[in-house]
Length: 500
Ligand code: NAD
Image (tube, rainbow, N blue to C red; front, side, top):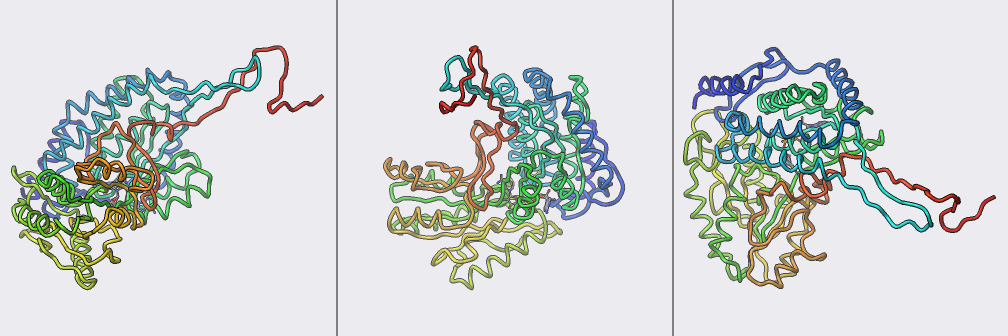
């Protein structure tokens, strides 16, 4: 598709959604499909950012006393609008992030799913009643809305990560100020406008959600503002390392979702057909640009040659190109810089003793950054393997004993997602045990990517430790109060202390 066609398609989607393009200076909307700019946009100024945070803080004051099930109605309406505009939003995701159609639609489906989850949650924000040690006393905990949640998000899930945070934050009684990736402004304008429509339809305060368009400096204003109670930031470990201490310095809360370096162990008993499918999707899907992308394959020595040969053959058949073309499975990398980083990593891997057994070349004729997903056999887990390169490179390592496999899996600074392919139940359970995988996500007979929203999502170590989405991740968006109620007529002190 040409840049003019992409521009027209983006405008048509935005028009159906009802969102306007704020033309001006400071920011560009561009498409990795052609590598060219689509629109010049007006970035949010520092004064506007300051005002937006103030407005959100004010809206929070009324929202926090709105009953949670009523707050759920807002999120239900957002979910309905997402259903109605699923295709439009998916188009914008493909245009700005380069995802193939089914993955872009999948991203919007994830948004719909989290809205459904959050609506149910709006009636289930449970606290506990705890046995009191004193007669005539009740001990309980109550969960209250927290305040303004600042959401900083990455380019690769330009809409879903916002919805994980926003749907949950809104039912929890919070307001949200969103600083999306500067690489995906159109998606954020569209998603934000759908929420504006939901706010209007349900009569909730419009200022409950504010969108800031800009780069790192705009994000920093959000990070440093004491009116922002929680900063939920998704992106590189570099970004998390910068913002974590800044938020901590003002005693704010931080929820970090950072880089991964995900591994799959393939045991000798594995169903290799299943493993092959799981590995190819996890490693080459989304052109290797998921935080959960499979980057390290740890395969038993006895089956390594056979598996690598089959993988290389499968890689040779992957259709690479325009993500709007039916049949394409690998779209472009987000920028030429990302393709350069991939080339540099491949050079380093070879210098560290690696051998490229599939892909690795740049392809295509326009200025989009299209690359062949690569497979590299490595003699050991060298420096480059221990880093996250946000591109489709799969490093293959071999092992002899299960203990070695687990040690290799855990011996990287990141701790997001991991999996094992095995038909040995003992081995599967050991992989999931306390001394097994050290990741936030550990799977059996499935790849590392493509999590469901029902579970808590996030990882350990340099991945940041945060948990978003399902399970009890909502607790990060609320504050807990412990309540002791004395319904007797005596004042009993805890721990039998006597006084007066
Ligand atoms: P990035 O770190 O370059 O940018 C992410 C966001 O942070 C952007 O909105 C950016 O403007 C903002 N930002 C950067 N520096 C900042 C600062 N100092 N203060 C405030 N804001 C700042 O990441 P990216 O290239 O957009 O995304 C790819 C990375 O994100 C990969 O490392 C990937 O693994 C990670 N990621 C993690 C998860 C997860 O859930 N763990 C999900 C998606 C992506």
